[in-house]
Length: 276
Ligand SMILES: [Zn+2]
Image (cartoon, rainbow, N blue to C red; front, side):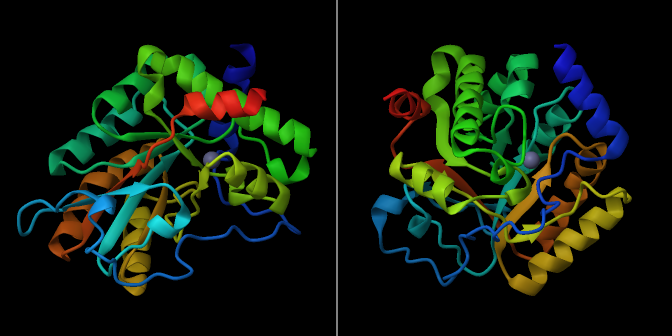
């Protein structure tokens, strides 16, 4: 707990808990959007549900078993929230998402899951996808391979433990802290069937800025791209503050929020694979 408190204090003081301060000499993340194109809606296995009523912000649900499943059509948006959960902010974000009936993916840090397991359960109970983001949010590209794998596995175990009997709800989705990956780690995760999810629209909500600046930046990037996976953090007050208006703006502009869910594997398989 002392270590956790120190982490939060440092993160708050330095505004550090961002995913994207890319260290030098780290190869860029492999983004899911390299081959972005119109989604093929003729593959029934990939579609679990259809968009909400006309004018609704709610989009379809995509079952993701590999990056090739993650193909967004123009106007489709995936919302992702990293580094939480944390009291006072994660719940506000859940409330804003509920207002529109849309679902997001939460890349949960193991240490936060240990500290606030009830919040992890709340995120899952409200229908969102729980994914993982290491135990302590280190830069995995600057660690030994074995230490990095241990960090990933420990994070998985912590998030699964927080969910208790619902541990199978942990998706086999992973995001590298600071988006700093290595080829060896990506290969290792791929062999376990873990899908590494990048981000194509960085809200930069980890920079000191007003909520409205975060909202405007995110919207403008999304409009320029036409679609994308949006990187946000549920540990920042400015993110929680601007989200209701961002969602209203997205709805007015005709965007649809797409929900990513795992195709089949669960964290139980990931843990077994890690132990072999
Ligand atoms: Zn992060």
